[in-house]
Length: 134
Image 1 (cartoon, helix red, strand yellow):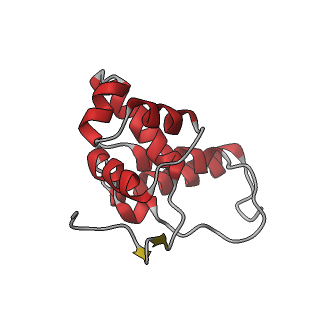
Image 2 (tube, rainbow, N blue to C red):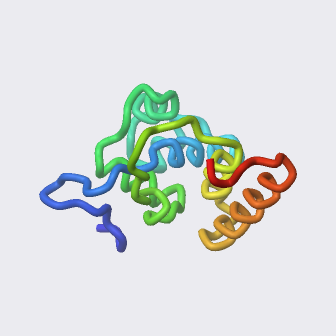
Image 3 (tube, helix red, strand yellow):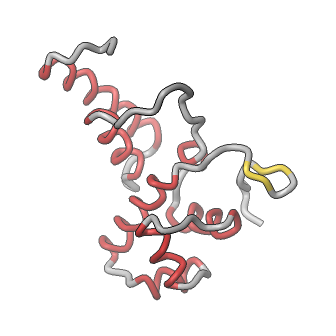
């Protein structure tokens, strides 16, 4: 059993995980360490086919597999299970995309990633003259 289990009750996940964050980190980790899908699967304890489907966005892993992936990738569960914002869905802008990449960077802790994201957003708004209220 992991120290920080996924937030579940009766096997049902209480929050939607940020699958894209996990996918991005998985690809980044494999590329950086030159690990094949087969090698990564052996390290995580799942098949290469399962990881391949997940990387391509063709499917999402079950909770036990997701938990092993989060643990292996060293992701912060709070970032993976951050509550989704309610309301109409829109395409993420550049600052939001940069924030996702910063959260996925294994060399940054959550606080540093958040600080850099805030700095980037402020600079982006100032330099591009984006209205922060839209």
